[in-house]
Structure formats: C-alpha cells, structure tokens
Image (tube, rainbow, N blue to C red; front, side):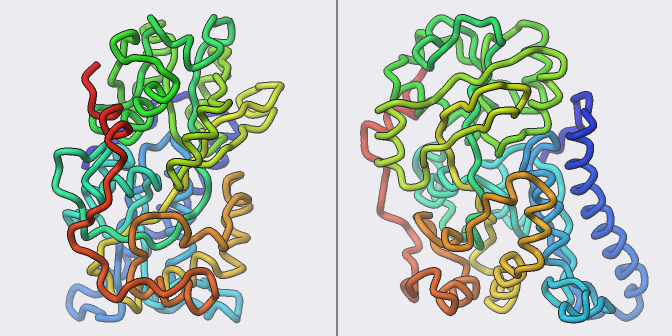
Length: 380
C-alpha cells in the first residue's frame, strides 16, 4: 500500500483538523508500541491491534480515520466508559494510517493487508459486485460494511476566473480525475457521461490526489475532481494560494443519478467553504467503514457500538465539521453490500435495519445497468 507525504502548505484551520488525527494516531501507535514491548515475553491474548486505511493525508478521511481509531480503542488498563474513560472495545488498539485512495483501501482489506478501511459507498458497491471501477476484476466478495459514516461531497474544482461554469464546459479542457483505477476516476467518468460529455472531447489526466494541487498551481490542468467531505484540508490550503471556485453538479441530471444509484444523494457545499460566498450544489456519496467477512462478530458488534456511543458521536462532531452530518439512522441503509456479522446484530437490536440473510451470496449477481457500465468502461 503506497503512502503519500503531506504536500500542501497547512493553514491554521487545516492544521487543527490534521493535528487531531495525528494526535489520535500517535497515541494509538504509542499504546501499541508500549504494549508490544511489554508483551514480548508474555503476550497478552486480550490485546488486539488493528489497522485502519484512512486515505491520503490531505483528504477528510485521514483525520476522520484518526478520530475513529481513538473512538474504538480501549487498551488494557483504561478507565471504564461509565467512569469517564474510553468508550471503545475493551482490549482493542486501532491505528489509522495513510493510504493511496478509496479503491486501493478495499483491495487491501480484501487481501488482508488492512483490517479496516474507509471508502466510498459507490466504490464499495462496485468492488463487491465486480463492476464499475472494478469491472474485469474478481468481485471482492469478502468485504463487508461496518457503518455508513457521513456524506462525502463530489468537488469539481476550477480557477475562480475560469470560463468553466458547468460540467458541459469541460469539453476541450484538461481535467484531472484521480489515479488510474481509482474511485474518483470511475465516479468522474460516470458524471461526464451522464452530462453528455464524451471522454474524447476532454483531455483526461490521471493524477494522484497528493499531486493534483501542484499540477493545478503549475497550470498543467484546468479543473479536477476530488471526492471528500468538505472542508477538504488540501483544498483549503490550495484556496489560500490560488483563488478557486466549485463547479455545480446539479439539475435534472443530478436528480436522475441520485434516483438511479441509491448511494448518491443531492448535496450542498456551504458558503464560506474555501472562501466561497455562495453555496454550491453537488452530489454526495456516503463514506463507509469497511472490514473483511472474517472479522469476529464480537469485535464487529463492539466497533459498531463504540462508533455510535453518544460520547464518541460528540467526539466526531467536535473533531471535524463532517462529524455533524453523521446519522445513526443511515448507518446500515442503502449500501448494496452486506453488513459485517455482529455489526448487523447491533443495528437490528437498535431498530436501524432488518435482519439480513443468514448467508449473503459469495458471487453477487447484481450488476450496473449496461449503459452505466459502458460509460465507465469506455475508452477516452
């Protein structure tokens, strides 16, 4: 799994969110190191360390991964939750780490390189089905969802003085759509096709998230797509150096996409974000926490319960603006991927989902509509 260093000048506000994630991650790493060092001669079977793939450092999932690690961790010796201690899973130490992108996170979880990861609901659905961004690959039938967390916003970024005012205006422009085989690339292509923009009329650029701001500043691209919950640290920093605007993704086409695909919904990036004066309409897609099907039901139940514990919900709400958009009622809804065994028990007990089939199909049969799949697979 590739990791990327932070390549952006960090604003004071961005530094605050990043620091929260780093502190949580550092604390978890130190706890893990201390316990490991003390357990070399007599390992403690009650201690479990898990890794969370949290995406590139400038995106919203990275600080949120640190918050999740902090929320679900409860190492031996910690005070009980009802006595003001951690409200996580007893004996669990979770560590968030930087990763390349949402699609690679899923592949890493399926391989067993990571125990959990953050991804997007559309990407997770495609991976489980072996369609969309994962067409031509073996379906990742062993991935499961622990929780839908918060809505991610699809950002289409251009210069403030650009003539680009709509998706249709991307014709003839140099547009970065993320790394090859990434979730961002698949989603961007789907949006272009939905708005009738043929790929051969756009100069599509496959550029990693960590490098896209530099390419934009060097005038190597005219616009780019980013899928992350606003405010995105990297975009906040970019906006301090290069005035930007967000191109709306709206109208009847956006309505249709939200109707056809259950993981999309109409969204809004609020005024004041990135220095913008007006709200910008866009599409949202859920951020999801993913595990393997082999996670024990007891651990999955404990993680789901910890994430939605009222004290930890408060941690998310104060830790990042996206935390205010977390909705427990949607945690197990409209995913198209089975909920992890054990986590489903938590959601059923709390009236948040109906019992799921005892044996989810190993080889999913559902596919994207042929036209939608063709729009993703077509060559530029």
